[in-house]
Length: 177
Length: 109
Image (tube, rainbow over all chains, first blue to last red):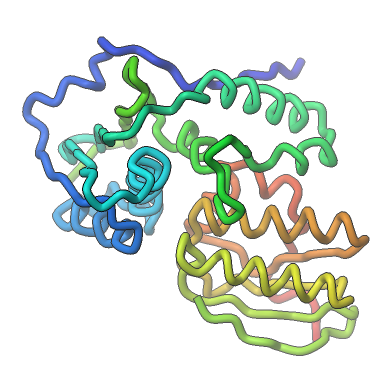
């Protein structure tokens, strides 16, 4: 018998994913044109086994983009703060200076409907729900970065109470070299 | 990202090869161009993705918009040569489940 399991974005201010002790720290101006450059710089000395082609770079770019575009509204006076640890697994904390992800609960409801349509093989409904459209979504936003992120960050994806800070971790079979 | 027109295949699809990075910088223009083609009447498009190196959520969003437009206009979109991290990204976002993905070298021109 098939069962539908839908993951959710979680808010937990005290989660261990926000413990930045021993992590490296960097901060960036909110320059939309340099998002991928920031991700590449962070991964400069990352163990090769973690890269999985360019999947890690892509997923790291997504959470940097969310902070710069949706959090800081690409305001160059606002900084993006980032902690990272690339030993044994990839762990990242990203904090922006925005008002926080107000629609987190709405997004969770959307995601449940989306995955239910997919589970029921209602592909017309699924295509309608393929991209999330919130109040701050622009016409060019993909609207699916969090969906892949929930899958990719297999050790958790947690928001703080203000929802302007996210902690993520990905574990790898076999760990680093 | 570079797009290269390959002409019409024997099964009537206009083919286009994508190479490089379909990302937050290049994907919006790609989506606009392909949606315009669908609206101009090119209703059967095939994307050859063998040389696509990088796909992010904006690129996935572009594919979604193209698929939605094709459905609205009664068109058909097919994909060939999908692999590597672009395939993985489409799997993680479940979008691959609504894509027609063909095997790499099967159909003759």
